[in-house]
Length: 116
Image (tube, rainbow, N blue to C red):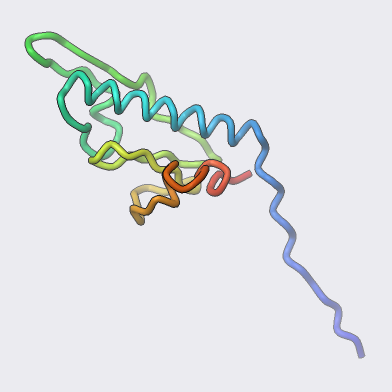
């Protein structure tokens, strides 16, 4: 008797628009981090709260540097206290591993970790 073979259904490819959106969101966060550093003299703390609020520097109100936290069902963008931007699969709540695979130092994390 021949046993039937089964294979797991393949995951559909991530659309180019999802990857483009991820890249644009990551770039917006990188730009916000750089602007924050320029106006505050240091990196923002880990998380997005410092980037979406105003701050008083030298008697002047500066910020916000980001209008809204990127929110997608296809990927998660996180930042650490060193100003590094990371891309993780959706619904990741915290940085689970700080490796260059999740930032743009070793390729395109949007293409690797975004899901359909």
